[in-house]
Image (cartoon, rainbow, N blue to C red; front, side, top):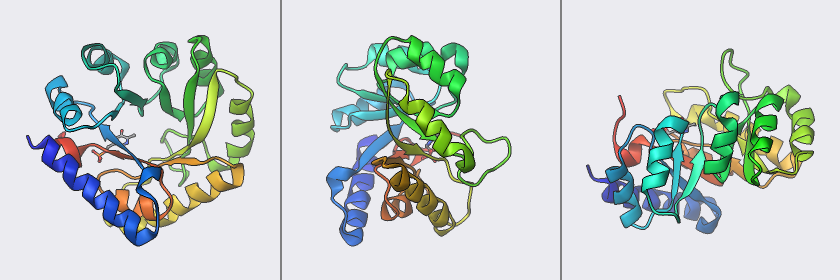
Length: 216
Ligand SMILES: *Cc1c(COP(=O)(O)O)cnc(C)c1O
């Protein structure tokens, strides 16, 4: 387990991509995706100075959130089951996976202001979470009508690809949608393709295995 070393390596890669892409590194939030990893692993990243972590299941995340320092910023990146959305909104200040009105209604019940990303199924893949790009304009208006959710950006999980270059057109499309809608934050890019995502405008990259090791 070399969490601190991996983290430092990823931060260096982000810095060098930003430099070559002419972007300011302060625009990028690295979310360390800690799902399936232990409190000890998260604590190691915390001790190395990291503060943004991503989790995808409420049941797994809750004990971690309760055990770990309060200045961690927790990002919810998993499937928002409607019956858990309210609790999720109470525990996570930032939710990346808003993709339906029913989930939005549940989040609003939490009685807490959350920052939200709309998850977009950018390649219109069947059976994949996220709203179709065709419905995005109408849905973003709906999200904006909820005072409990502060809409900050768009998120996508691109199709699985063998070469990170294949993600580029999808990332570019997501960025174009965000700009068109006047949304400043773009959550895209994972261990395999975060550098391409940053080149295409990502502000939030979600990196798990490259920091914590393989999940298998
Ligand atoms: C697991 C997960 C990640 C991290 O994936 P890695 O390939 O381990 O970097 C990023 N985003 C979401 C939504 C995830 O579920």
